[in-house]
Length: 273
View 1 (cartoon, rainbow, N blue to C red):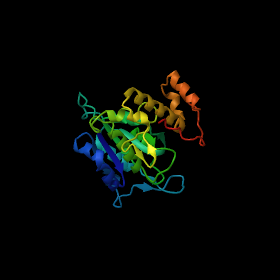
View 2 (view 1 turned 90 degrees about the vertical axis):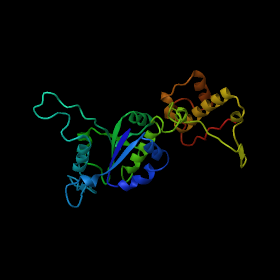
View 3 (view 1 turned 45 degrees about the horizontal axis):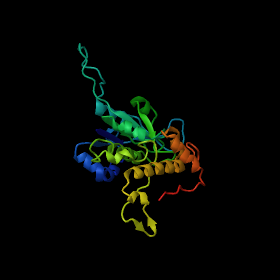
View 4 (view 1 turned 45 degrees about the vertical axis):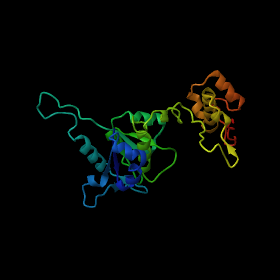
């Protein structure tokens, strides 16, 4: 998979994209990440990427020109057609799916990350200042994405988050698909609690069922804990979860009915030991 990133701060990506799983994925040829400095696509000697907003107001707005120039350099400015006068059109050039990070965008979800992981080529656009001239999103057919209801200084951190989320879904990156099977949001629920050695520390013990060797019982315990944790922390996820009548009854008995809002004062669900 290829991911191009448009930014005015290319140095920000060296550390996060050059270590651990992301570094190994690139070394193995599973992921091709290319960082582009938008200032290389400006037309003045000062390499200006921003300007005052039309209509007035505080702050600066990123100019559309550098974004369009970069895009044209990636896909070719002449579009899909062949040479003038030719009887046969040239093959259509591949084009990236464009993602623009904005507080006004759709909140990123695991479902969206999974969809992007199925794309062969992405172009991620990182904005700054008061934002990007709105004609960039319109002209490039960009999908606007937000990490949540808060504001960051730029799109670089969201881009890193998205690349990380995508990379771990690519075949071969994590080494085993089992790592993805039961983690949070894969089945629409939060993941169950995890434990490892030692079995006791500072008076805190591992639930006995996990030490029992009874695999069906472990599976039931994990499912129950996943449901309880989701009901307590993210109850809205239960509305689209596939639950059995027995599971719904269990949540009702715990005072955490499926889809009900547990409220900010509700306690953490007890881990059954």
